[in-house]
Image (cartoon, rainbow over all chains, first blue to last red; front, top):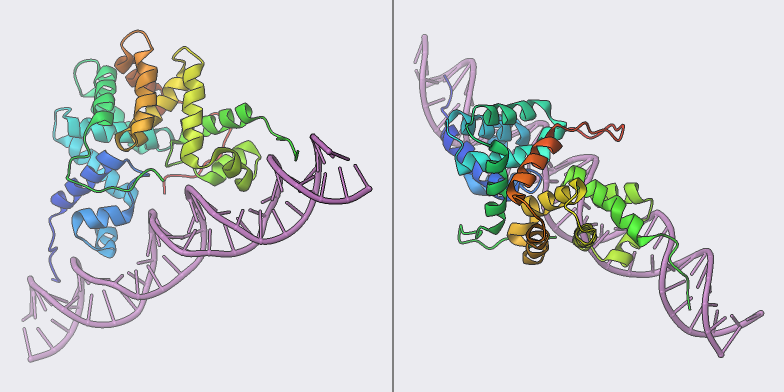
Length: 131
Length: 131
DNA sequence: ATCGTTCTTGACTGAACGTTCATCTATTCG
DNA sequence: CGAATAGATGAACGTTCAGTCAAGAACGAT
């Protein structure tokens, strides 16, 4: 009974993941996620519970995709830098991803970190400056 | 004429650097810096201009110390993850530090990133949880 | 058709954010 | 000493934050 979701969960999670990858966890506001997904605050909260819940889901989906792509690496970078030290669940997801990945993961992370810092904000955007 | 500074600038910058290293840029509030330094908001602003100004100073001093210590590496991690992609000046300071450092800096960064994520919050603290 | 359930919406909350500023105090110089 | 000036102080600013909720719309089942 009742209404059906009018949005695709996977797509919404992916859009949020994009925001987290670019602007980090603390640097991404709910309004940023609202703007990126086209959903409304309430829908986001009733479907995903919290900002942290959304991030965890994004990290898990990215992990499930298998290979350590740039996208997954970026999310892991954010998780390790901002959340892992104070959030054991996120720490274990992040390290789980690294453990399942071949090669020198520390080097992979470091290289991606450097590339990321030099990347054009592309998305043809106008962004807030450092406050 | 007038009064002299009653606090030591270097010491204040170092205290702020500690906060930035642990909780990141966006994750560190002015109140956190006020608490860590014992200064008052106004003094912090009249002496250093802004949160960003304080971070830049912390990064520069750390760089000036020469070797790529863990402390400097942590600050560079924060700079690259949160600020460099949208702040050219910080980007150039951070890359300047890396360019002056020997060895595979990407790997150094990656290793430190991983260690950092697993470190005890030590400072015998009680901290805010993930919001 | 109607009832029950689920989803959608956006106004709202209170706290926290970075920053400013008027006021006060201490110090220096003549 | 007294005037001038720099630093110290903390209240207050407007904004943005993450999160809530009451109301209504849309749908499935009977």
